[in-house]
Image (cartoon, rainbow, N blue to C red; front, side):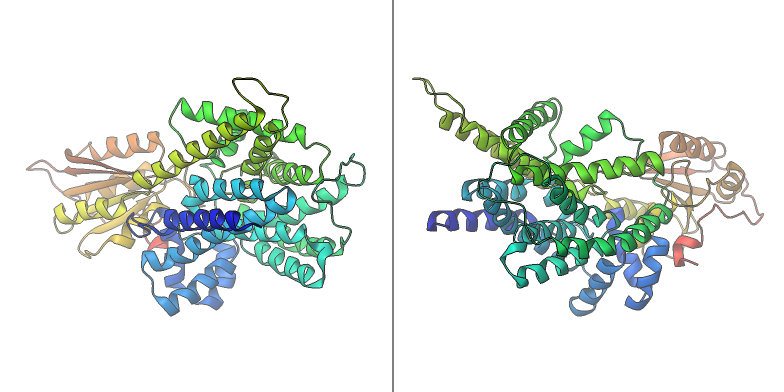
Length: 505
């Protein structure tokens, strides 16, 4: 690598670090982050090993590691997001090393830029979740896969990185399957050797596949039983396009269609241009195997094709786009107006600009739910004894995380499209609750419109709406009984998650 490439790579890594660390604690915690933190607060590392697989659709390694980190450095939002930001930043140089090995330094640098600027990867690197670590593990494992013929230390590192990645998330099970598919297709696919060839040393992949049988069955079963994924639609063409588009960035309509369509064309150009290259077949398998696997699970068990569940495949699409940009340099264009090199530079510049816009938009737009502001609105205005109904049980965790007052009654109401295993709270349980309080607050987040309408209608039967506030991802509405109305004295029934979410009993 020449000094100029080193300088450009250093600048790219520095930019990635700024985008991941700057303002790391500005936005409040969103619901999944709060769920993670609540589990850390309620269980010891040893307990997390068994509680997480039984209570969450995840594996425990990330939770245990984060709990140990929390014990050393504290439980603030910035502290807990820090490991993800580190993993997200380290993914950039690893992406460079991988694509440089597959193609060349120019492609490696452009691949590093795509990861550095991708709003998909920036968002995961700024969250108390495991997805940034999974991305780093996938990139490192795949890079080491390309170097299996280079000695025992690379073989040992490949096994360690692959097995560690498998332990982070159930759907990391697709990682060694990608590598195995590459080795299998190499047996019969026509090949033109360029910069990289498929490894002859194949036994490490076979060794890594053994845990797939255990981790795969256990992990996917845990994932499917840990929660009802009612928020994930049955995948069709639109859902597949949405997931693939998320790997590139987020833009408003119609730019998302224009940029997404352009990147899709570049990816197809890259696939066609590199159809005889083992390197491009690796990228194709990297994208196809996880997506097809999630589609299979979606149709055989329950819908699971979701952008973050497809994290294993996420780097492959922008890398195929990079391969398409490389292919433009070989076009037969040489006129007085332009050359193939000019077209290639222009397209690469447009790609970087589009990714930069998406990344900047992520930084300048509040994306996380504003639970801190919503809870402060309730607690600063509610009278003693007021009832707060949060829909539903999962979002009640977010409310109670920021709540300080103990003189309010906070209950959860389960909606028809809940992400929990609880049954929908019947109207017969909600109506007496509302009738037993003079003042009622409704808090909505991640809830179906029909559930909002039901709760608003029930609250309006004996109360009058007094206030309504809209926050990012959260709606707060308050109601008050008119003067002269009586309050029911009977002990109201449970709403379905009054106790379970408070102390997990």
